[in-house]
Length: 99
Image (cartoon, rainbow, N blue to C red; front, side):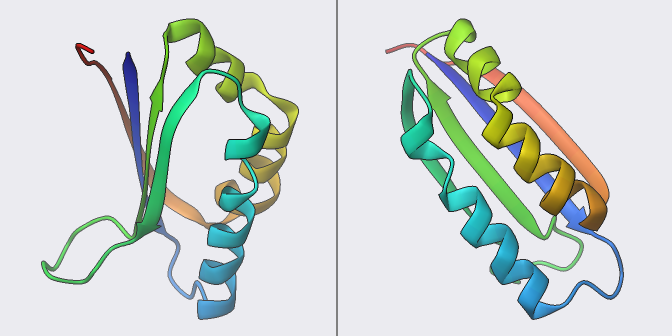
């Protein structure tokens, strides 16, 4: 199994409405993806200063399922329309996790 973890820091001035739009758009992706085992996302709880603003954690059957998600037109649309314009910083890590 492969775990995809991505965190975002939003540009200054990102509004609550824009944050809600990110959540709404990201929520549309899981039903469209094959090989997706689990998909969680959300805004930082604000417990520690300096954390990222938003994170997605997605578990895939294999690397091919991750690449299919990455390249899926719906995902690319959310990235180009919603997340990329708001992103000041983005970090990603991929872990191979034993079943």
